[in-house]
Length: 381
Image 1 (tube, one colour):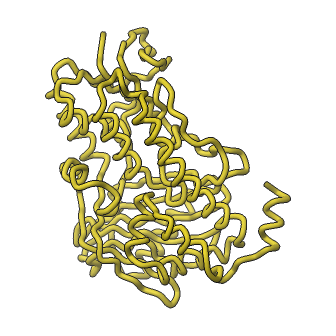
Image 2 (cartoon, helix red, strand yellow):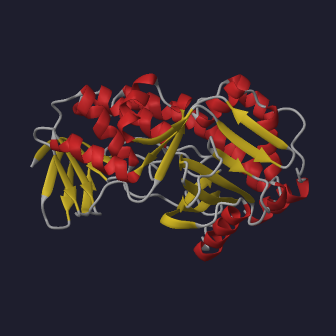
């Protein structure tokens, strides 16, 4: 079986490539391999309006299950509403839309429920022995949880989608509520109002440890909801994750087959967000004929991403090496207190300017900076 593109892994990266190819190269023959029976796993992906171009935002519209004109953050002594858009995508919607796009693509096929045994520059061998030949192969499977031993912190979370008996008075996403007790590093709660009576509530940590205590975090979500008067409710769905926040390790150097997504290093090193970079990479892939994928355009893309990622890694090093866990929240509080909205937007989009980087690094350090912690980090790293 011969294809123009073979995409391995049915997550966000492959989904965005399919959508971009179907629009920009409608005749492209696409093979998508996913070991599970459905695409997208069990996830919610969110993005800020400025994370993507207008063209990409339009293309993402069918995947969006919630969008808002503004969002909010809370810290002890600080509440700030940011007046730029925010949107969320569900894995259920992604599965539906991408499947329909592939079904409408002549010469394309979805291999759901099939694992890739061997992925090479121009072929993918399935575990059942079949081989898919392709001009370009993009491997977006899985995630390297620790890009370099001792060189990464972790964002970990448990989220419960809850259905309330009575509507909640929450008009906008609360993307960071750091007024909660600080434990296991920087802790905050993330709340998406998917409907007046339906919320996604995530207990989130920026921690040195990748260990996820699901039972404890689940209980903390229940406590958070109860303290805000959202009971009674029923849990409709649960999701969890552990994302790397590296300050060391190799950066992307594309070669066939293209390693994309988290395992390829194409993500935001500070926030753990993958969508902005995944969307840009999908646009690039779709803009080139498959035989030219590994040309100067991809090399330039990887260099631009590496420049931004290196700065993000500096910020991660400062967060995890220059601040004791209990004081880490001061960094984010200063960020939201002092940074202009334009800088915040570009930071989340992983598109910072030199001026942004100077604002983030220069000036008096946030409260909690510890030279002793830096030295101790050097000794244990």
